[in-house]
Length: 602
Image (cartoon, rainbow, N blue to C red):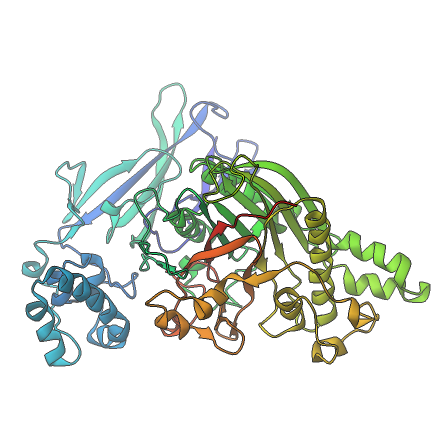
């Protein structure tokens, strides 16, 4: 007879919006063991499995800490309540938690105060008491019943009226009848119970006792403050996304570049400071999708996208939001794992804004083989291939805009755009390989530029900091022959150094924060390196902080209108580093809004 040997959940903490999929180990009649599902539509040996999910609601109401969502809250900030800040952000698990979080928590109050000031209301009443205490006013303990009478999730009460079962001061509400379950806002603070029982296919009656498993309390998905678009061109523009999700007018478009951290690299040894539930792929994929969709970019360039995650998740999910998807998986001469978990570069574009014209795939391994055939002595060929073959790729896409280029002298002409998306080799000791990969990509883009008068964007994770030789090549069009990176060249592939040039007029989009003329750029300039005109960081882990990611554009054909604001290091350090419960990659997303410039007739 069919039997259930084991039931467990891969994630220890359930999060709102993240699907729960129990792992079941079954024993068949012949004593073989299998993890396969046995639904009612396909019974096995006259039996199938029936599933139920329950929300267990204690008569004692519970709130969860906004900083440590796996902990029960004992304190509530009254200032948040008065300022109408989302109630979930007002709870803390201890006085120490509240005190430690105050530096970051008060930002919520400052923003609320700014909004209140604009309307000329109540700032003194709400914030005076906070300032007078120095660390904020907190509510009395929430453990008593009197302090929890108004506990709600937004406008929806946490406790629905319908009762399914009651047992010892608890009420069980049936919430699902499939193997998987996605917690909702109504589940926050409550334990879930999964029940699995073998059922006779003929009588539809249970056979034996049900197998059950209890989760810990459901926690809300962290909700970081939205990042704003900051105008840099001096135009009078709103800095917030409009109802359609973007600020771009008909003649502009937005481009996002984001290394999303492949699940195959997101292990607890590297990122031990990130809670295990926040590092799990079921959580991270939902959080990343929510962030990416929220930017509403016209073009999205992602790096470190696993092949299976592209096919099973990102392509179908972003298709629902109007995006067409293109993908280039890394080659696997070096990679030894499953081909499904090899990562690569994925480029998405909004179908209502662009149409696909052409795709080019750059495999640096093939370029390495060609190089060693003609430029490396036969005795060194094996060593050269071992050094140069690293599986990295680039995806180049030519798109045609469906929107008008305002102000162009020939508005009827097709507006094409070339977008390159790459992830350069990450090994820091292989400086020659990094330079060679970037140079190879740029030479390929030069060929495209020579065949068509076309604006270009070069996006990605270049695994190179500002001032490095790859960055100099991109930003300056050449590398100083005395640059220290050029000393690492055991195969002499970078010589003569005079060949390390290109003719594309590339400029880093984020340098516009330094060069921009708009008001209100001071905060962003403080997050820029004034020596390199690049962000202080785009990659922030416990052991490294620096800039690795860039959006370059051809300055003779495109201008920068606005940029997504940079993050402040202090705001990230409250969680030690990235990834964190709020931000699900160790990199931050970059986004720029561009306008096509009128091109002179050739």
